[in-house]
Image 1 (cartoon, rainbow over the protein chains, first blue to last red):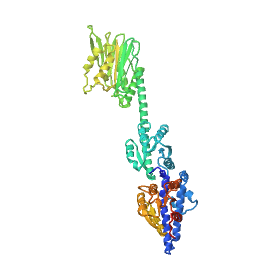
Image 2 (image 1 turned 180 degrees about the horizontal axis):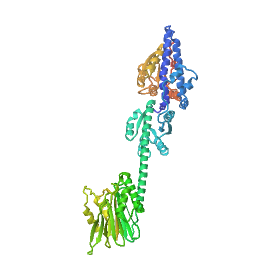
Image 3 (image 1 turned 135 degrees about the vertical axis):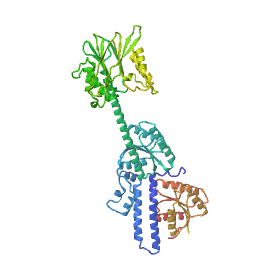
Image 4 (image 1 turned 120 degrees about the horizontal axis):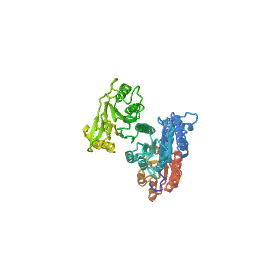
Amino acid sequence: MSAESPSKESPLAKLRHDLRTPINHILGYSELVSEELADQGIDSVAPDLAKIRDAAQRLLAMVGEHLSEEGFAGLVEGRSLESSAAPGSKKPAASISTTPAVDDSAAEIPGRILVVDDNAENRETLARRLQRQGHSTAMAENGAEALEILRREPFDLVLLDVMMPVMDGHAALDAMKSDAELRHIPVIMISALDELESVVRCIEIGAEDYLPKPFNPTLLRARIGASLEKKKLRDQEQEYLHTIERTQRRLSEELQEAGNYVQSIFPAPTEKPFRIDWKYAPSMELGGDAFGYHWIDDDHLAIYLLDVCGHGVGASLLSVSAINVLRSGSLPETDFRDPGAVLAGLNEAFPMEQQNNMYFTIWYGVYHRPTRVLRHASGGHPPSLLLIPKADGGTDLRELRSPGMLIGAMPGMTYGSDSCEIPPGSRLLVLCDGTYEIKRPDGTMIEFEEFTTFMREHGTRPDGLDALLSWVKELRGGQPLEDDFSILRVEF
Amino acid sequence: MARILLVEDNEMNRDMLSRRLTRKGYEVVIAVDGKQGVDMATSENPDLILMDMSLPEIDGWEATRRIKADPAVSAIPVIALTAHAMAGDREQALAAGCDDYDTKPIELPRLLEKIAAQLARVGKSAPVA
């Protein structure tokens, strides 16, 4: 087309032209037929032909009125052809013009939609149609403006024209999909039919769908509905995910807090009158181990360590309950200087049927300072170790075992106490099975003798307990501990 | 009998207008696109050309320019027919060399008047209806 040719016709002018052409045919032929029939002296159909010509003339007038640039603006404001054409009448011309019904009933899922098109007419027509269906809309005339609006306000859907100046649809989509804040907003590409190749590229980089121009109202409605529904489901999924994350975070914080509480009830290491220290490493946030020591009176020091089956919240709650009973000396008619009596009392107080089928093992000892005698009893617990210095500088190791059923398993059990005299400079190690029942990465367990050998060698060193934990972790070869680790050391 | 070359791509428009002009006593020859229009302006030696402006191949504007650039046929009156009465179309039609201009839908009496006027201008006569 040469430079002098009229400018490219607007879509509205083309629409006008396309509508007028068939109406002109009706008009022209009805005139022609009238003339030909008149020539032959046939006039019976003349009135009907006149009606048809009349209707066609009115149709032409309406096309001129409504599809002029001014008339069109009024139409999209919501004025229907019928209401403005012939008020109060049901003339044939008026009913013909409203025949192609557009489904503008309310959309099932109303959404906030951004319409991006450089053509103002297209943009506004589309926005108004969406508004009539109950959506709320915003408009942008190029990709850059669209991105600016998208970063400012939330949207459920973007209708994006492919061909635009400044920033085209492809570039805008690319920018959206590489922006974590905008990536989730579905995009439907709007394209002329000859732009299908670029639409395919857009779908490859993440466009949800496309709509060919000119719009088929039914297709428009269906694709927008489907996109909004998908968006809604995805939003719900995200909401659930956030709820789960929040809950997990809260639970984890609470577990951490509970873990801090458990550790806070363990007595601090002390130097006087004996040096007492300990090492504790739960396998999860909360462990089933608990221990303590306290002076029952001026002469008697109680030392105890218990291990509830399993670990985690339930085990931890039972271990805290049991340790608090020991700390507060609250068992009915029980002499806390008598280890066997204490274990029998615990066995009555914590039957597993009433403890969610959990039971525990315990080692309980009472040291009588004036006589240097340690009385001890065990409820299914591993032996404590006594490291005794030898004259030659070496160390003897004695295992302080006493028989006894684990606590809570069976009512009416009695527990015997054993005694031993503690040589000066001896160290007592009270521990749980988590310190020595260690599985190597290859699945084999270490032998108890390996453990006692390690303790004979390192147990007297000031950092012996740390050394033990390091050794255990090393044996695990980087795997987490399978059980809670706790050990208590008293230097007499 | 005055001979009119009708250049029109739409079959129905062509059929209707040619039949109506024939009824009015004209001889009508038909071209279906701009290129054929230009060729037939020479080969058919019409007395007048009715030129639709939106045509395939070469459009009515260009076809008119070519006709008006050829001394052998430039004297033949050309009446432009445009579908949309856009402001400026008349000026552009005249600028392209058209001798007159009419808009669709065709109002036959008006068009017949314009045809008669153009024929009279070049010393030809319209048929007596």
